Image (tube, rainbow, N blue to C red; front, top):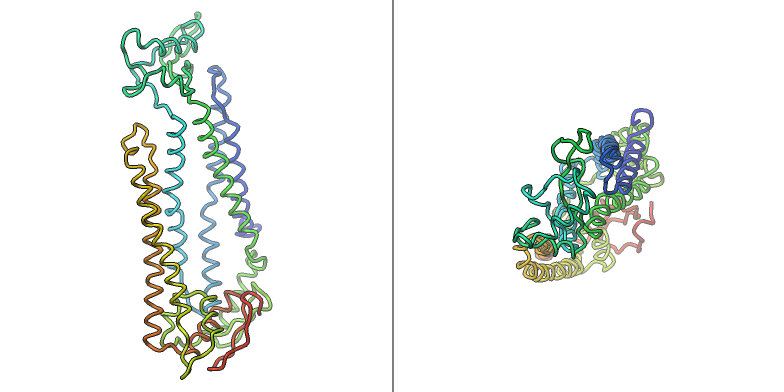
Length: 404
């Protein structure tokens, strides 16, 4: 498909097929037809379809390679593969904690029941009304003082949470039932409706929702970047840019990219700040001696640092609230989510703390106004803003994203 259309269209098709196959699992229900097993058969088919669709994940690496080439063009010849590939691998890991904790937390909240111990799974298909027989078997556990469901909870308590005891007809040894050789079945339990819906939603609706969000994001992928021929034009434009020419962006007509200027003395420290933050410094105008006003950079960094500081005690409180539940039979604790909040606060504090340190260094080193203008112009190919005139004079105000 990628060779006949493009990598972009193949990746969109991959996401669409993944969304459809993920949502298809909502059709599965409890399978009590031991002769034909329709839902079990459907599950095998859906798993095979999902695996077939999931085979297209490798396409994103190729798309990211195109993005790296485009980034090289916008930066005037600098390649930053490591940053992009690191982000591609880091973001899924960042979502592992909520993705794994929230479903189990909700299952425990809705009283998930562990499987019955193997020693208490008698054959049941050779009984009259197998489901009713199994239900009576477990609910009468107090007659012989046996804990047939769990060491920590009685079968009656499980029954009161909505759990039902059934005969799993597809399990057990083979024996004679009504003169036929068939599975004898095993007594077991059926989760309550709340747990069933948690499993259904987190295996179908939730994955489909986030995949659809990704498809919406792909809609904004530049239209001129969706074909292989336009990628070849990008490579040609990059070659011209390296020769010192001012080149029109082939993926965004009307925007022109200038060759990279030699880095200024404080170019590294200025890289910690966004175009809007640099724009605030430019709008403040030059100070005496051509210096720049650094206070907008420092204030923004300190403001974000104080915001992330609040995450640390808030997350610590959540960890403390869930400590007792960590020893719960099902581990229904919010502590992992609180720990994620603490980690988020520490990472944010570290990131914006470094930005604040960079701002203080710029102030101490005497940041020149023209350096800020040069750094802002360097980012214009990314933001679409109009390049500012160089020099110590204050330029006319421009709106980010509205220029050429």
